[in-house]
Length: 210
Image: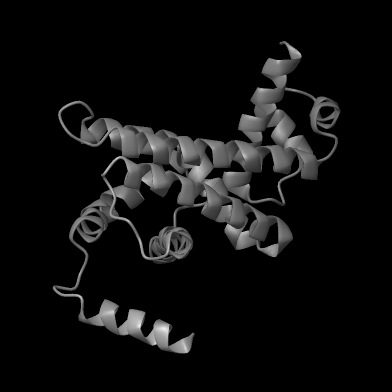
């Protein structure tokens, strides 16, 4: 196994292990999942913290790429919904890793969330430019709200529908998608309110505070 391949194998195995067991998982457990020695893990990443930092970067990149792909390839004749759901299930480890990071809390989690918010704002800008997403009165605030809303929704769903210990991440995400895709799509497409009364009041209130 080349150094590059070994590094990627360890990183991907670590994402799956952290997603399953949380960040208390040992280097030895990760090494066993990757089929390498613990020494090789340390050789490539220096420490478990170094490994987690690289996992963070990779998960954020995967999330960004999925978001951009969904904006550029709308579900329709060319991209079947079942294909999109299969892709989402394949992303199970990275999505569960993301939730684990938020649950862990601390400086690493806060940094991770800030990077996720920044990526979301950039992705939304792509959708706005393509005419697929409505512009926002405050793009940065919308991105932060969407991140909080999406992560919070998954955390609540997991509390209501707790998966069994060591459940497969892909199965967890697929079950979540089946439960939520209709209301999520409806909310994203149509919203809730039938007029702008509430929004107008909030905008006027914010203007009076200045």
